[in-house]
Image (tube, rainbow, N blue to C red):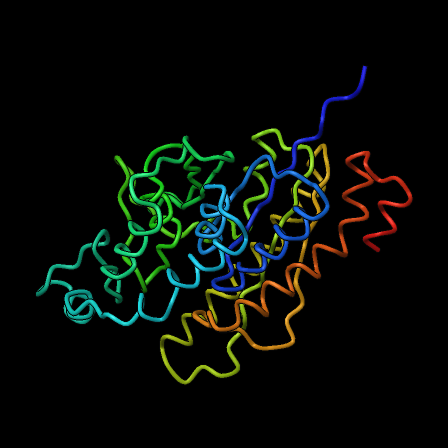
Length: 292
């Protein structure tokens, strides 16, 4: 009696437009005949995981996300939030409404991309993570509105307001775990491919916003490293970290660099394919050598 096929999860961590590297991973896996059984997405990674889970090709995923995640989603400013930050008593500061950027364009694009789709109806099982604003706990969204789940997962503190789902106020998933490998572990994945990205440190901090981004990078990178180390040791199966190497500096909305990012993701995945094929039992010498 043959052993059951091992379940493979692709976890796409936080990383803004760098998450497009997962499309390159998708290309490499498809060519090798490797099926993804589960997708987990966090922060901007939730956008890519959601698009892949719908069953769209790598070309469609790249096109959708290139149009969805642009600098236009961050151009509109929230006048009320700015005033409430300066004079909270006068203008009535509210945590559930505080975000310095207006999310109107973002919501319009999310609805255009995902419509009324529900997570439980996806072609590939999908889990999206966010963070409970009240207690910092990770919240895993595996059912319900896809638009709501993605919006909650990308609720970057200070930039976008938290998102309410039921009785919970949710913020960006990276605050609880920038690369939620633990979700795939709990969902029974045997092999986990983890696309992880460290946040860039600021070269200088001449403004309050850059100061905030630097603190955020310190926090998220330390959390990324510690959580990944824990799950690598504790997981009963295999966790394979795929880290694309970028020679170019990539900023938050550098969507013009998506082709370059995809290539880097594909190259990083190709490096891991021989080992992955061996784990799957399809690592016949000729097959493995073809990917070395």
